[in-house]
Length: 307
Ligand SMILES: O=C(O)CCC(=O)C(=O)O
Ligand SMILES: [Fe+2]
Image (cartoon, rainbow, N blue to C red):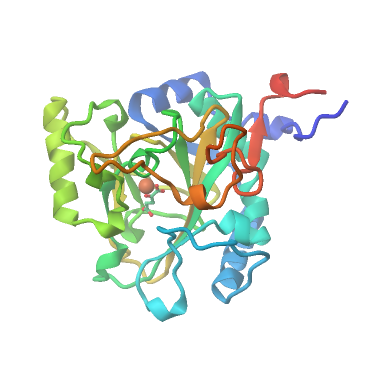
């Protein structure tokens, strides 16, 4: 047998979402997992993040993509975002590849395979009035217009108990099922580049168009648990009012079927993602979102494995 993916232990199997949990995710667009990481694993993430911030890298990107989030100390005490940490730092990357995490995502997305799409290391300094700490309403698919899949999802992994006072991630319940109006191309710009009031208004307009009431659910996440959201679920988060930094990794995941697609924007250019200048090409010349160098597989159903 040449199976490459380790099976889950019986204890891990018990942590997978139940059929009712999968239905909850399909209906609400988000899911708070069981305890998927041990305290030791989360503490190892914190220690690895400290080393990352001190400048440690196992490798660096061969070129700098156009929209890379890459905080460095010269930016000062603002909210930190650093992309591609699973690629650049093995201490972070190895923990993020935990098969159990991929298995949970596969159940939710109803996919046979889960690959990393992106990983962003996040740090909200404990400064209550810091404007950059506020994450305005958005959904992640807006940044991924060049991705063909509608099943992509994000695992939000805090490094500690994460409650409302720390500005935990907050979901707009069921919003992944809304139809979108007024989707002008500015939505593909990252929220950090956009006006916050404009995004609040966009949320209200989209809710009204769908006859929906906006129900905001702050996800109170105990250490080791993970909050998952669908790529069309609106979410955001508030200030960090605590006396500790709010630290997390946002692990963006793609199902096995995801691939680069041609998605023309109104100005005639094609939607692009940072990967497009990094990953290898498919035989027909498209950016390959399955390049194992940048988009490693973290879960494949055993039924799909050769062996
Ligand atoms: O840091 C946050 O609260 C939100 C992060 C986010 O937008 C995401 O995980 O997709
Ligand atoms: Fe997001």
